[in-house]
Amino acid sequence: MLDIFQLHSSVKDPSFTSIFYSVLLAFVLSSIVSIIYQKSFQGLSYSRNFIQALILGSLVTCIAMQSIGDNMARGFGMMGALSIIRFRSSVKDPKDIIFIFVALTIGISCGVYAFKIAVVGTMFFGVVAMILYYFPFTSENNFDGLLRFTTSANGGQTEKNKIETDIQKVLNDGCRYFALVTLREVAQGDKLDFAYQIKLKNNNSYQKLVNELKTTKDVTGVTLMLQEATVEI
Image (tube, rainbow, N blue to C red):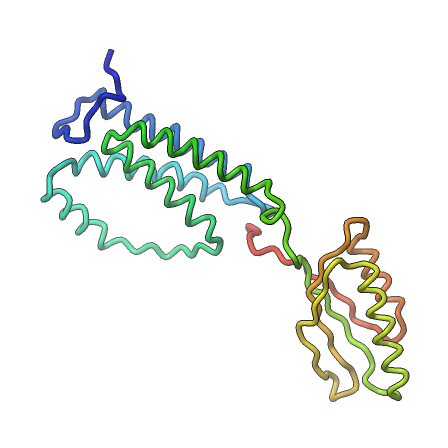
């Protein structure tokens, strides 16, 4: 039986068996990477098309590397063929770029018969990715919501100070962190519009914070938008 781990990258005319093992290994390893991506995803909804693209991209890269082999002319031909392709999909999360690069690297390693590098590299990458997923500094954000509300700009300074004190008390009681983002005059200067980035305390809820602000004197138009940049629409 052919030992696939003994194949050398200098093979110029690979056999059908070696090609089959290479593509199969690229499929298995890229599937493992896709599972790791799914398990370590921190958004609300991951893209199924992106996961399929990871696997298919690894297979295409493996096939391309096998077709090029050690032939320089094939390499230049492949570069010319790829130069007419325009990838216009925007990748918002830098972590997605890393997973794309890993999938392509797996395809390259399998395509040049560097099976040990592909297997060990995939296993090590998966372990590190899951460790980072459970690290405290990677699983928690300082701010996870944008709170907006308006107050009256009319009245004396004493009344304004009291309203500000009441708002600060509600935020201190319900939030672990909060930071004023914007403060502007609206309604022709009759109202002040506040925008805060906040993170709630563990024993508090967003609905409770909103309700407490709504019951605060002269506070109106309370809205809370949770910040999540990785939601699939």
